[in-house]
Image (cartoon, rainbow, N blue to C red; front, side, top):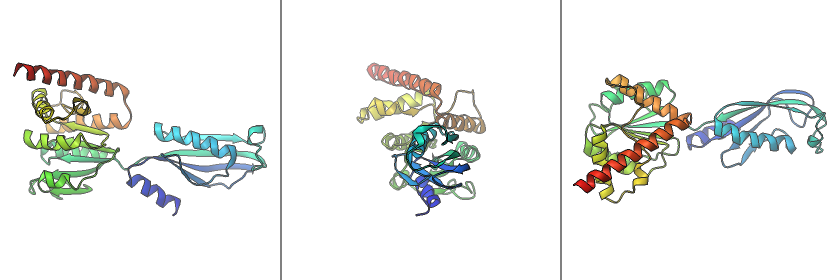
Length: 281
């Protein structure tokens, strides 16, 4: 398979990688300018940039590039460093550009109301693919979501059975009622999704958590959820709420550690409140 076809397949599977390309070569090197090597997230490779210690160092750097999601340029002076004298090189200098290969990041929007339309627009601008799910065809349609990857206008339970989110998926639960929010959340916490967010007041979140815990869903699973969804920016209008939600997803995508801490604190407080109200009941 062509290396570019492999990259497409890797991204569609929700996996990461890094592509190494020789961008500059002077003197005698063990490969040729524009040679490429793909390093996958499981450590396997495709293609070559010449083998030996250079390739081993590039492989290690590629692991870091895919984790940090930032490109890097490596320079090797093969004339003056004896560790590169492996019989594979004759001397020279080469520069290798390493770029991260990131999975397709898909937002699954559960609900197709006013907030969802604006989340869809902002998420598309931020580079996410969007899948829309709602049980109302008058809301979930191509007129309202023309650039969505998929639009499901059917019962939530039936739609959920067809979805296969992966570790690069973002689940945003903004249906029109508690019952459907809880139905989707019950399914969502058992997926490998990178992000799960649910709209609603803290009172609503506590009520849903209480019900799900009664069903036997562990508190640890609920602690994954960003609820109430979105960064706390005082958002009121559907447009503002959508910006808060997408901003939170971008922060997760970029690995904002402080945000993860705030979420874990918020989650623990909500779960503690749920337990307290359960005792009072």
